[in-house]
Length: 124
View 1 (cartoon, one colour):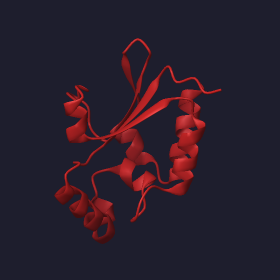
View 2: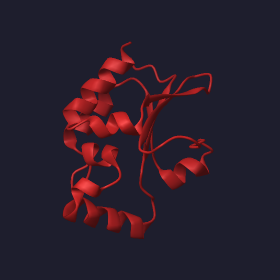
View 3: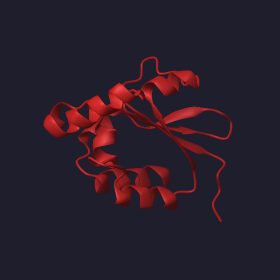
View 4: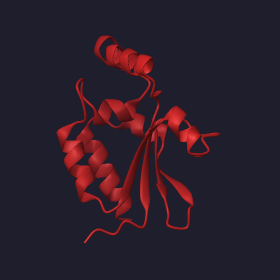
């Protein structure tokens, strides 16, 4: 049985509005090396979520929340002094800690690397 007393929060370095989504789609196709969201590059293809990533998410016993940077501010997640993208864990006490920061995400080269890194960090 899954234990959902903690939450993993994935915050993408992108906005949620329609214009931004369309612009990001084009940016990822025409100039992927300059796209500013490594988390999106790792977890999404051109037409949606990577299937391996989606399957992995089903296996981890955490609630999951996926936010764009504008949505994070709307739910009062303090992004001051935090570069995006970022993966946070919210403990059952409400305390947030960083699981993977922007620099660490930027060093990963594949969804497999991301999955293995998250598995390692969650099992510490």
